[in-house]
Amino acid sequence: MQIAFIGLGNMGAPMAINLHKAGHSVKAFDLSADALAKVRAEGLQVATSAQDAVQGAEAVVTMLPASQHVEGLFLGNGNLLASIAKGTLVIDSSTIAAATSQKVAKAAEAAGIDFIDAPVSGGTGGAIAGTLTFMVGGTDAQLQRARPLLEKMGANIFHAGAVGAGQTAKICNNMLLGILMVGTSEAIALGVANGLDPKVLSEIMRRSSGGNWALEKYNPFPGVHENAPASKGYAGGFGTDLMLKDLGLAQENAIATKASTPLGGMARAIYAAHSIAGHGGEDFSSVIKMVQKKG
Image (cartoon, rainbow, N blue to C red):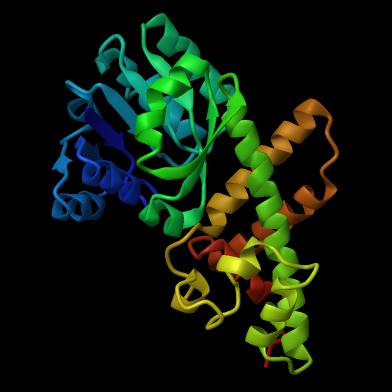
């Protein structure tokens, strides 16, 4: 297929590359020249604009930072829907407000375009390996149309419900992720403050009732997992400010639905303080710095 891919960050770039490796013709665009150079080196076509990328595309995949970027691209100054051919499939893998997905989907439907929200989980490692989890909001027919592409980027595909449901599932997941990363960081920091080896303690907890994804694959303490961002100066990965954004989406949704999420609110406050302290661009596992014993 001819695919337009817009948004080539830490997640988007490897996703686009995997579609290319699967034999699809991918024309990519990002505002970052460095991001474009990276995918060009992998053999992908590079577009001069988002409008250029979608010319002749049978499917469009977007991976953007926040709601305002998605709405701006499709409906705002970008007005990309006007440049996309009728009958095209649009897969938005950004993590945004469900209401934004629904707004764009409604406009897309009026233009004869299929739009689904398909946010992902699995981190940059999953994006590179093609083992992401997709949480899809849309009709059964739209999901079946998207499945051959999603399967080239991920290993798990869940139909969460109607458009917007994928976003709701994603913010629930990331709220839990933020909470467990703070708790994991506190536990490891407490053990280290008492002289325990972080590798030994992490393995004990991993195989005990405190076991979780962070202990399995994304340890926040440097040197425990060789390929985790913590062992690379907290570079790459999933940024603190992105986690803060997702926790904010969860709290906005909780307020709107009158759901009680006290731990989610606390995690958001912690990540806000961590960002204000200058760590917004670091991986979200760097939150361990807030609870580590100094000196």
